[in-house]
Image (tube, rainbow, N blue to C red; front, side, top):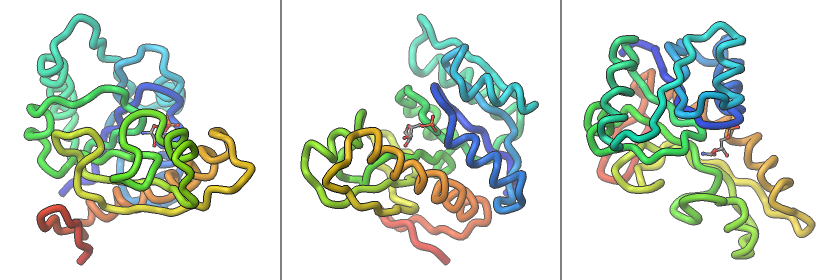
Length: 200
Ligand code: GRF
């Protein structure tokens, strides 16, 4: 397996930057082949360009989901991408793209799945009243935040937390475990057995 990854994002891009920093500092043995976004002025895409990465804006406006994903797949194949890392990419993937990259798409979610899937996971956790939340890196399947779980990290929910404070505590863990999960996949250290992802 080569070590070429693509980061797909739609917004801020802090997970992308954490991955990039970990690669640059030698903590993660991988290569960012490209950063792709459906949002032209996404801060993460702008930053990727400034850092000299191959930064691709692919407009999704007016395109059917699968047609768009076929374009995405073409861009990624052209760059010999081995692993797709979704990092705040605000689009659902079509079954086509998932089948094109079987068990080779990761996503990070800011809650302990299967609790609080979908949008505003940190707000959902606060409103539910859980005492612990965290983040999950999972393989992407055809559901929303339902794929087999690779890694999770736990953080406490404190009495005086608001959404911002909880999100910041979770984000710190996201930045740590996303690179760890990428490393496990690239080094073929995981085996998928049904819903379980085992380390070998
Ligand atoms: C993160 O909270 C991630 O868990 C979720 O979207 C957010 C992206 O943040 N999927 P960033 O763009 O990486 O800063």
